[in-house]
Length: 211
Image (cartoon, rainbow, N blue to C red; front, top):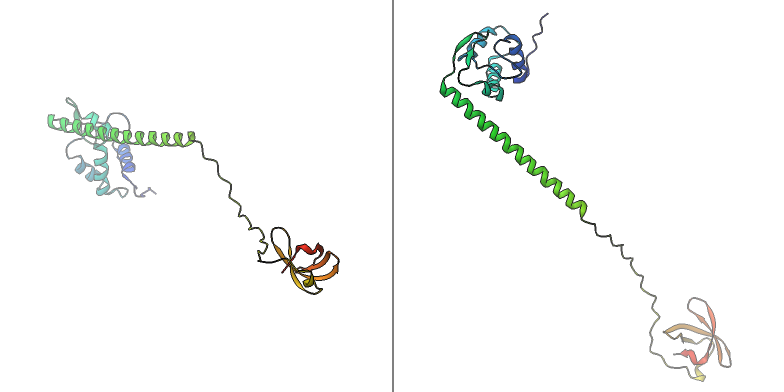
């Protein structure tokens, strides 16, 4: 059974008509100028061909005749051909001029796009090289939060008088940088044993006691 699967795009259509009409269409090298009205001839020859529609044929012919290969072949002295490769009239000067102008414009557009892409690639390479050459600043270690030093209560006090040194009396012990709350638990001449608020006991001189 013959394969009647539809052709998907103009590239496939061009390949198909080049296979069907090799004396007229070519996929490589300089293309031959086509007979004026070649579309109608193609449509008639492929009327019963379910693989390709007229719309596809028209789009494929437009792509084929705008290719550089085809435009290069449109030159003075060249002869147009029909589907079977038979001569079908010489090219007119205005057709040649139009083809040459179209070719020049197409090449200029491609060259401009290539230059734009080359400039973009060069800028990207320069940016990468600059980024690579620039030394990175060393990362600063995170500053550790300093814990506030335990404060020793600064209390306005006076030195304890001798008759005020009594067991069980709540007093303050002068520790040089501040006073600590304590309670007198034992008296031995100038030495006094006190119990601090945290339960620790210590012996201090009476001169260090404050109220």
